[in-house]
Image (cartoon, rainbow, N blue to C red):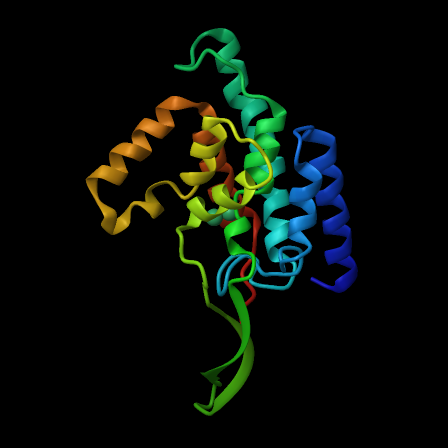
Length: 211
Ligand SMILES: [Fe+2]
Ligand SMILES: [Fe+2]
């Protein structure tokens, strides 16, 4: 992404935040992002949107997708009475959890020189990213912590951000985490909507830059 695309995405991110979120603390939360590399960081070190500005772009993609998934699939089912959930989710909640779900990624990607072999077997260097997490508090957990410094989150919003990686975040931690994830999914449709939107965007809408 070039600098002007990064600036446009930042302006879009700020405008959407202010349009959809009216909760006290929003301006301080947005100001806190400027103290990090959130708007210029990649979305991953070697996978989806591994390029400058990828993290903001990914967050915007998750927001638009979560809103579409909720309003086209989940909300109609709640209205019809065919969903296990009876309470609608607000667009403000969708905006909060999707725009800020990956704040944990701010400040962890370092631009480094990497090496690979070219077609004739000679080593050549290229610019890439490596992860250096100075506060390894957990992926969703760290995002919840950051947002909670500024916004008073509902329990559904906390659970959605905490569990947005779904089963990928359970791994070795085994049964207790798995049961907690299932229980979180049963608490609010927001949990599943964010998981689905995140996976959909990362796997079907975002490219990896081959190096
Ligand atoms: Fe994430
Ligand atoms: Fe994400």
